Image (cartoon, rainbow, N blue to C red; front, side):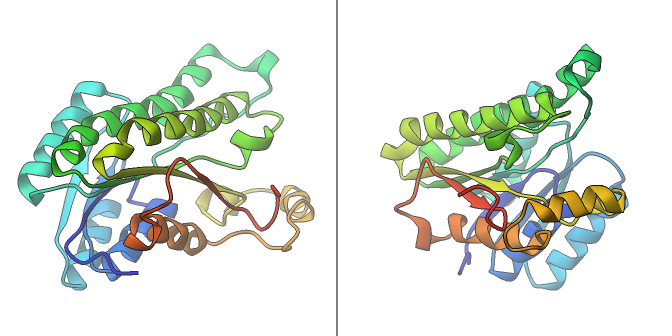
Length: 247
């Protein structure tokens, strides 16, 4: 898949799936805008790797739930990079707990980052994509947004919301050459899953027909396909990358 001449904005790109996406897209020829919140060294390390591939990298710390900050970030990115062709809405958090015990603040925090963040970033980038009559919008949902999961009502609601949001954006933006799709990962090996008890991991594996956790590369390669010209006739879809959990 060739992304030569394209610029991609990836949220939450300093670690996990976002980090792998940034490096995968850069390897395919794209310049990368690395959005992050947290330790700057992690984001700068990704940027260094992108530049080592001969691509441009711009690092921007922004809370995606902050509407004004996101608008400023996108304006700065478009000005410095010249254009934004691809948006990957990847930033996300968890605040798990059974509904009866869930704090309102935990509900609000997850919805703010995982769903409002997608709204903020997509809206801000869309006006530039509309003008250039080209764009690829990829939002990371989850198997949990399709099947639900006990202890994750907030996360499931946000990830299900991304699916409806994506389908609506796809219909609004199609006439301008812009596609919008979602990826619904299953259980993926990240720092988050690395600390889970063996019993929990065993239960996860039992629910996966392919019998293994996903790798961040599995999700990044799916995103690369959707970002490429090979997927130019695909929009409003949810690509399940979950080892067969949903079929």
